[in-house]
Structure formats: structure tokens, C-alpha cells
Image (cartoon, rainbow, N blue to C red; front, side, top):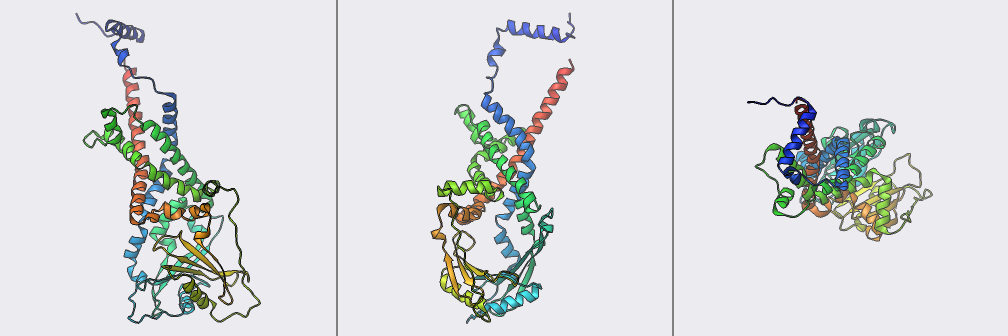
Length: 425
């Protein structure tokens, strides 16, 4: 005789209770141990903070990944603009002459100059002017941002770039402020990055194996490539996230230095072990001196003498509307691509006379760390291996919101299916 299925929930509960009694409570012995309070809190934070910041973290990580090798890609794309053929007896033209040529070509009043010790490089003459400081987007906040590149031996323009529409500049400002004006976009990026740091911590709590048995070890440290998609996605979220944690943490913290002034101050205080701000030294041009015809040429000659080992020298000449006390600044960069190991000269804008010098080696540890922040962030501080690490770290960071969302989506569907199945009895 076939017995009919119970139709009431109370009847089903009695049957289940009876089955457990007849089996001696074997199911209860197999029941999982209750989740600890710490893991519950970590899980809650990891889920909801991840959902809240996922899109921003993804955009910032993807753009960071793309930007790492921008120098190499740009030099390949713009090779005709960036490089020249140096004559056998190379003689460089006066810097003031090239500066005037660039300003006429760009139709601007004043440009900054980047010169190179590499004889095969064209020199860059850049103009930047801010737009509406209250504009919503990056494009409204910038009035003009462009460069002319000049052959230093012939004085001819090798090419011009409008950076407002340049691919890598757009990528950089997506990374910097989501293409919003800095006052609006940077707090969003900064605090999303702070949330990402919290996610790294909660993710470690959730990932940490309860014991180091071989089965748990394999689940935590290895990806099951032959597993079904759901399991594979779970491994791709946890395992690369663990191995790249240190790199992604460094990338996140160095990004926060720019985005949040309080964090930069904290980094400076910890590194310098002092709450005293760095000493600011000021220099002033002497407006009573008779202005020479080409003070920038004199300043450049002084800079070359002061920076015999510099690969790049950057000069900025005050424009016509600047105070008469303003000075010409010259930065000597020793590295091929990095910016931190830099000394700065201050020169009289009327005579080109050297007024003072600030050396990187004389900075305190806090100033040095802040100065190195960009080079650490993009990996340049370690050369090509550092850039590869930054690329891989950014790539994995970009994947985490995607794989995490898919894990959450899968569990949500599972709960919905279970709920539907239970209500059908």
C-alpha cells in the first residue's frame, strides 16, 4: 500500500524528527560547526562593502593595469614625434629659440620644457592651463593641455599632441578621478580604495584555512582548473587574491596618499617620526637687476653644470603675469623614467643666476617616501620587474569585483531556488 505524502508542515516536521530519532542522530553529528562571530562579521563586511565599491574598484584597477606600460606603448605609437636622428657633430640650438618656436606653433604664451641627455630624443615643450575650477568633469576643468616636440639640432617640430584627447591621459584621469574634476572624483576613488583595503583584510579572514590538512591546503592555495565553473570562479577569486595581496595592498595605499590629505599626513608622520611639517625654503628673483636677453639659456647652462648625471632636465619659466619674485625652476631627473630621485634648482628669472638648490638626499624620510609615492605606485621604482608586478597586481585587483559578484549572484540564485523548492511542499 502506498502512503500519501504529508500535506502539512507540522506533519513533515514530525516525520523528519522521527527519522532523526531512528538513525540515532547521525545527521546531527555530521552538521557543520557554527561559524565564528569574527567570520560572520568579516563575511557581512566583505559582501556589502564589495557590492558598494565594486564598480569603482574595477574601473580604477583596469585603468591602472592599462597605464603601467603607457611609456613603452606611447614611444612605439609616437616614435616619429619622440625620436630624432642626431647628426655626427651634434650641436644643440639655443633653448630660447626652440621655446619660441613651440609657443608660436601651439599659439600659447609660455611653455615648460623637458630636455633629454639621450641624443636621439626630441625635446618636449608643454603648455597647461586650468579651466573652470568648479566644473564637474576633467574636460571642463582643463582649458588647454598640449605639447610640441622639437628636434634640438634643427629646430623643426617633429609633432604635436593634444593631451585632452590622448588615450593614455584619459585613462590616467579615469584612474585618478573617474574623469570627474579632482575635488569631486578623487574622494570617490580614495574612499573606494580604502574600502578595497578593508576587503583585502576581510577576504584574508574568510580565506584562512581552519586547519592545514592537505585537502584544505589545496583548496586555499591551488586553483582547480578542471572543476566546474562555479568552483573555478570561487578559486579565481580566492587564490590569486591571496598571492597578490601584498602587491594590491601597496598599490591601494600609495593611491590613497594622493586621494586623501589626512592619509598623506599620516604616512609622512609615521615615516619621518615627527609631526613637524617639512621646512619650506623660498627663493625670490631680484627685479632690480637688468633683465638679460635670454635668461632661460643661462639657466639651462647652469642646470647642465649642476646636473651632470641627469637624464632629463625640466625647466619652468614664470609667465608674464607671474610675480616679479617668481623664479625659474629646473628639475634634474637621474632616472630614465622615475621621478623621485630629483634635485631642484631655483634661478633668477631675469638673469638666470642660481639662487638655491634642494637635494633629494637632504630630505627627511617622510619627504622621501612621499616623493617616491608615484614611482612605487606604478612599479617604476623596481624597474621593469616592478612594472610587471604592478600590471599583474592591477589585473588581479580588477578581477576580484567580477569574480566576487559572480559568487554572490550564484548564492543568491541558490537561495531563491531553495526557497521555491521548500514552499512547494
